[in-house]
Length: 120
Image (cartoon, rainbow, N blue to C red; front, side, top):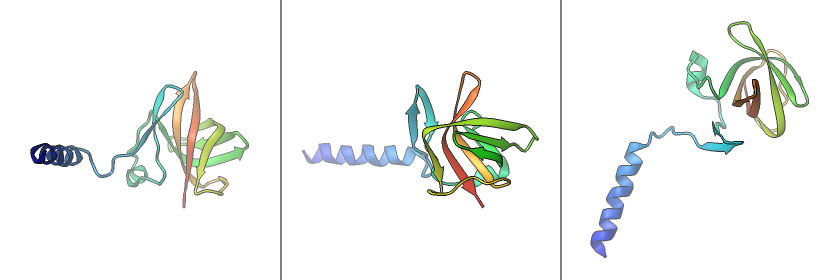
């Protein structure tokens, strides 16, 4: 019994050493694995981000279920919000020129937002 517990402790220690401390939770949405970011990531300020699941830019306009984001390259992208899209910080409303990261996925050519993270 002691040998099994010791072996289990070693396996847990090795497993935790392999995972980076900054590993993000991933959620499954409509068959897509999407990062569940809850805070602004430091690399985003330097242009390092997952281009399949994150859109960075400034808010061009906001309306219920619709967000337009001006990217660094000048393209303004329309993004669909859905029931359940989380805007963080909680209770905030996106306003023009505010820095934003939108986390979600593409579906039939449209980016669907799971989370909208507003940044000062």
